[in-house]
Structure formats: C-alpha cells, structure tokens
Amino acid sequence: MSTALLTDQYELTMLDAAIGSGRHERQCVFEVFARRLPDSRRYGIVAGTGRLLELIEEFRFGDEELGFLARNSIVSPTTIDWLANYRFTGDISGYREGDAYFPGSPVLTVEGTFAEAVLLETLALSVLNYDSAVASAAARMVSAAGARPIAEMGSRRTGERSAVASARAAYIAGFSATSNLEAGRSWGVPTMGTAAHSFTLLHDSEEEAFQAQVDALGPSTTLLVDTYDVENAVELAVKVAGTGLGAVRIDSGDLATQVASVRAQLDSLGATKTRITVTNDLDEHAIAALRAAPVDSFGVGTSVVTGSGYPAAGMVYKLVAHHNEAGEWVSVAKKSTAKATVGGHKAAIRTMENGVASSELIYQTVDARPEVEGRELIVPLMTAGTADAQWLGDGGTLAARDHREDAMAELPQTAFRLSRGEPVLPTLYR
Image (spheres, helix red, strand yellow):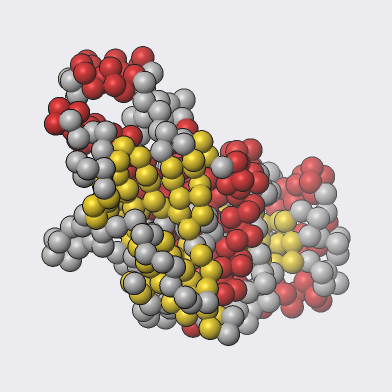
C-alpha cells in the first residue's frame, strides 16, 4: 500500500512551486534533529528507523493518489506528471536505531534533490518522533526495573497503527514482550497474554474460571487474582494449578503492600517459585518505587505508548545545505528566535574517556575528523534509494535492540537518574 499521502499538503505545494521556479532539481541535504530533550530526560533513544526505511521504499504515487491530487487541485498537472514517476533515489544516513541521542544530534540525514527529499519530511518526522518518544520512555522504565522483565500492553491506549509501532519501539528499548500480535507478525517481537477480568466474570465462580484457564494453558499460566478478593483468589489459584503455578497478576490496589502480602501467602502455600507480575497504571517512577518489593515482572500500557507524558520527541526536519548555481555546496540555516539551526552536512562522534561517553561532538563533513577518542555515530541507511537490508524487518529490530543495550552501557551512571536534570552529555560543535 502506498505511503505517499501520509504527508502534509505543504510538502506537495512546495514541490509544485519549486518545479515552477526551476529549483526542484537542486541537490540538498536535510537533517532530522531535536532541539532539546523533554524536561527531566537525560538522553533519548532513536527508534523507528527500520520502519521508516520500509515506508520510504513504498512511497509511490499510484493512480488513486494522483487522482485524489488532481480532483482536489492540490498541485498543477505538471507536478502530477512528475509525481507519477516519483521514487526516492537519494541517500540516507544517520544514527543506528537503538542509539542514544542528545540535543542537536544529526539523527537522520537525507541527501537528494529538493523535490525528492522535501516530500519525506512528514513521514520521517511522524515515524521518528513517535517511535523515539516511546523508546526513550521505555528505556527509563527498563532501567528502573533492573533485571526484571517488562511487557508492553498498551495497544488499547493508542491508535491501531501506533500500537504496532509502540510495541516495536518498546522492544528495542529493552521490553521483553508485547501483547500486540501484529507486532509479533511484522517485526518478530515476542508476544504474550493470558486473560482479563472479563474471563473471570464470565464464569459462575473464580475457581471455575481458573480451572478453565489452567485446562487450556497449563499450570505455568498467569492467573489474574484481583477480580474479587486477592487473598481468596491466591488460595484458589494454588488449589487449582498446584504449587507449580507459573505466576499471579495483580492489577489494582496499593501494589507495594499487596505484593508483599501475596508473596508471603504464596510461600506459605508452598508455591515458592510462582512469580508475581503487576500491571496497574505503571510508569518509570511507579516501577522505581517497587524496586524493593518482591515483584518478578511488570506490564506497562498507557505510559509507554504515550511516551510517559511526552508522546512526541520534538524532532524537526530542516534543510541544512544545497548546491548553488555553480554546483558548489552552500550551508543554510534558520536564524529565527529560539529556533535557530546549524547549517552544513554534519557527522558526529561520541567521545569517550576511560570507556565512558563524555560528549556528543558534531563536526562538518567537509572538515577533517577531529582527533579524539570516540565512536562514529553516522552509518549508511539507504543508498541510491535502496535500504540496507541489515536495518530492516525482524533482523533489523533485533539488531536495534542489541545496539540499544550497548549504547546504554557507554553512558555515565547519572544518565539513569529519574530526577530532573540536564542531558547527560553536552553537545559540542567543531
């Protein structure tokens, strides 16, 4: 299915006017970056790159899309003809998916003609802003949970397409599984799920409901124990499934107190290896508050799919360089108050001191690489309109997850504080 109309009208009207002025074929460099991080965040996580590359390859104007544009007089017939043959043939580079980013980080660089590259602005930002917001929030939750796994279960709290994207982004950030089956099918994210309160309410008794679930899924299943009375439900759960019961789930109440009581009850019943999972409106702060409680795993819904209060990462897509009449590169930048940009085609290094990241060093590609110890952050993502296969599909998602773990290991420990603070690395320009 074409992704060409997943865009804003002004992308097309700019193209139309540029074709009229004859500037549409100028070679250009566009850059995606965030001016700042959300309040209290020490770092961000890049997510959505693999999804975006696939969507760009599907960015075509077929008969239906062209017919819509023509019927509504959105662009001229000349531009309609130009769009009929559209295919992005430029190059895209940027941070690896799963990497950390900071204010000013050149997360994505798009090189091509103005006509080709300007059309990708809305698509690039809609993907990277949402996925990175989810991944950035999810990474904080993973840090707060320590070694305890977290499942993503927020599909019902966002749009149906966003649900799939958020499950993927959360998995890249370190979540262990998702309840969303499409994310499993499309991206290889492990899926999980057992039963909701409606299943218990369907049956004539809680014991009957537990027995039906155990009969269907086996004693290793997770039984939801807070539909009626938690203490009675835990006793029934062990009675039905035996001491080999896999887990119980608590979805309400004062979790710290409830979890301690349930752990003691399970142990007294001989179910010492039965795990406890909690799923009650959790965010990174609630998870951190349960650090000392005997919780074995978490399930997070609303907070992760809404970026824990910041549903967009605040990234922008700006023209930073273009050819002049002589075919020479010219840096361009905005000077608007509070929205000034830094022109030029850039590269970035994460400088290191004693194995720990110390800064985000950004320099112009026309200059020599600064002689500093560090990791080059920019990698090729798409060449001549063809995406590098290593970033796509299940494999690309898993690679992003692994890279996120490596990137987190580089950061100073102060990065993982949940209190308000400045970005953990300064952004420096050469």
